[in-house]
Image (cartoon, rainbow, N blue to C red; front, side, top):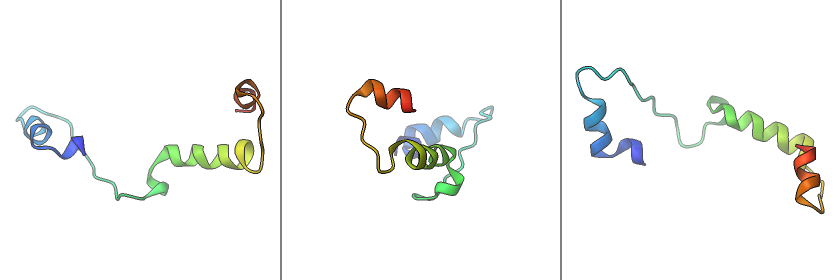
Length: 61
């Protein structure tokens, strides 16, 4: 991934860099906030539903 390449590691290792990356496991939905949103959307908007138009889908969201 881009955040693990040598150029990024070098940039992050600068003495005054205050950015620290925390590596998450490849699949860890309970640590990834967007996964909660996808679960809610799936349960309440897309689960077992069909929207004939994009406008109807957008309105449901």
